[in-house]
Length: 454
Image (tube, rainbow, N blue to C red; front, side):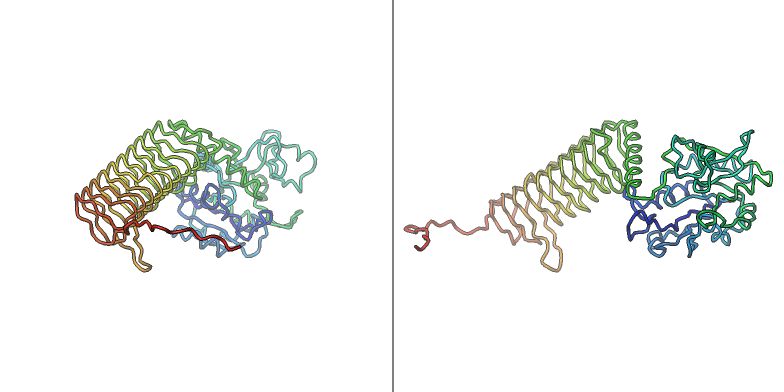
C-alpha cells in the first residue's frame, strides 16, 4: 500500500518552561523529533508530513530534509484538528500512520506490526495496559471485546476511569475513511478541542472492526511533557543502548553512567569506564580501553589502544596500541599511527604522528607532520599561527625535541636531529646534529637582591 506518515509536532509544551519548541529538546544529543523521523523513515513511507505550529520556523530550520512535507496548524485545537490540516497532502495515499513528535522511543518493529493489522481493517490502534492509567484516554470495549470508543480522562465517568487499557494516540487508518471521519468530529468536550480519538467511535458505529496491538515495552509510548519526563526517557534510552552494547561483548563499568549521543560501533572486549560520553559516530576496535570521564566524538580508535581519564578525542583516527592521556585533547584531522603515546595535558590538532613517536607531557602540536620514533619533550609547542595564517611544522624520523622548545613554523627538523631544551627554533634544522637556540647563561658576581625600604 501507499503509506503516508503524519507526525504531530505543533504543541506549545508549556510545562517545559522553555523558549525552545518542545520537539527540539534533546534526547541522547538529538531533538525529540529526530528520533521520531528516524523511526518513520524505517517504514519507507511514500510521504512524510510534519504538522508544525509553536516555534514553527525554528522547527523547520532544524530539519531541512528534502523528504519532509510541512503543514502548519496555526491554532492548536487538538489532535483531530492537526490531522485535518494534513488532509490536502494525503491525496493518493492508501493509508496514514499518525505519530507524535514528543513520543521519541516508539520502535519501527511495533509500527510494522500495526501496519500489518491495518492490511485487514481500515483502522488499527496501538494500545497499552498500564498499572496506573492516569492521564490517558481509556479504551472502551463491549462484552465481546470489540473496541467501541476512546474516552479522554477528563470526559470519563468513574467506571471508565477504572479501565487500564489506554489509547497511545498512535494509529493507522485507511486514508479515505479517515477523511470522512474527520469531517464528522466536533469539539463538544471538556477541552473544546477536536479529538482524533473521536474517529474510533465513528468507525465502531459504522460496524468497521478496529484492530489493536500493544508495544513490546511501555517506554515506547511515553511522551515528554516536562523536563522530568525528558530526563526519565533519557535514562531509559541510555539503559537500552548500554544493554545492547553489553550483549555485543562490550564491558561497561557502570551501565547507568554511560551516555551514547550518536552511534557506537564497538568490537568485542572493549572496556568503557564510568561517565564516558560518545557523540557522532565512533568506532572502537577489539581490546580498546576507555578511562573515566572521556569524550569521544566522530573518531576511530584501533585495537588494544588505551584512552586514560578526562581525555577528549574528536574527529581523529587513532591506530593500534596507542596510549592517550590522562587529560589529553586530540582535535579534528589528527592521525595517530600505531604505538604512539600522547600524555597528560598534550593537545594535538590537524597533525599526523607516525609509529612509535611520543609526546608525554604538556605540549601543543598543531599542523605538524611528525615522523617515526620522535620524542617531543615536555612544554614543546609548534607555533603554527602568525595571527593570520597557519603554517606547518615537519619533524623527521628519530628527532629528539628537548623540553620547553618553541618550533616557529614554517620549519623542518631533520632526521635524528636533537634540539636542546629551552630553544626557540626559527630556521630549518639539519639532520643528525645538536641545535641550540638560547641565550648564554651568565652569573653576575657581587649582585645583591633588593631589600624593602624601611
